[in-house]
Every structure is written in C-alpha cells, then in structure tokens.
Image (cartoon, helix red, strand yellow):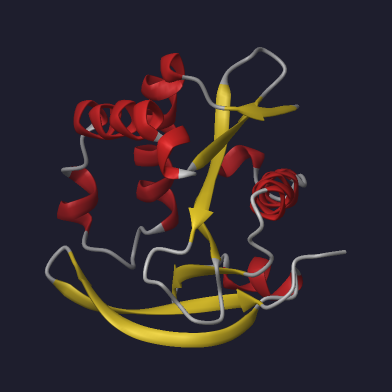
Length: 171
C-alpha cells in the first residue's frame, strides 16, 4: 500500500472514506439519523476547501491507496488549533476503511503526520478522540497519554472526547 500526500483531485475519494468510516466507526456512538444524513457532496466540498488552503495553513493531508490505487484511508494534521501551551502539533483526524484496519496503515499514516510536524518545528502533538471510539487503544499503544477531556455535542447527544498527548515526538 502506498502512503502519499493528498492532492486536490483526491477530494471525492477523501469524502467517501470520511463519510463511510464515520458510519462504521461511530455506529452505536453517534445517533443513526445523524450518520445517515452525512453527505458525500458536502464533505467533498469541505475537502476541496481544505486541500486548496492546506499549504498556507501548514495543514497537511496524507492518503493511503490500496493495490488498485483506490484511497482507503487518510490522516491529516498541523498546528494545534487552540494554542495549547504544551502540545504544539495536532493529529486532526485519521480514518481507515474497516477492511483495511489492523494492517499497519494507522501507524504509517500517523508517522507521516509526526514526521511533517517535526519538519515544521512542532515536536509535541495531541489528538482528540471520542471516549467510546475503539481507536483509543491505538493511541495508547503508540504511547499517547490521556491529557484532557471535554464534553461535545454531536447529533443531539453529548459525548465525551479525550485528548491523547505526546510531549516529545523526536526520536
């Protein structure tokens, strides 16, 4: 499988992965109606905007392609978005289609984001994840420490979100 930097013409594929993985990952966590109403078209528009402005915002997006060149996963990151005093970089999102999970792609994509954060001088990182997300164990296995928690609203319900942090990304 190939991991590479995303291009503008990847917006449609990114939208499909994004919506589909939300529907599988958050089934039973976020209300079914909310997940059913997710739109490929709206998400594609968001991705086009993000991809168009990524460089100027020091925001970067990586995709993973399967053997046939289909995008099956992505991760994106950049500067931490709330001016945290400890964690300067952030893994904004990482999503992998269910059939491709547990094959090392999450690790590869995260390493791509971490490498890029270090290249721009950001040597610490956090990621926010829903507390009920099965991926929490992935972040713990990568050495992430639970550092914050907050309540968020999504689809009309209140959910707990956790932040996992890494104070030193240098190896």
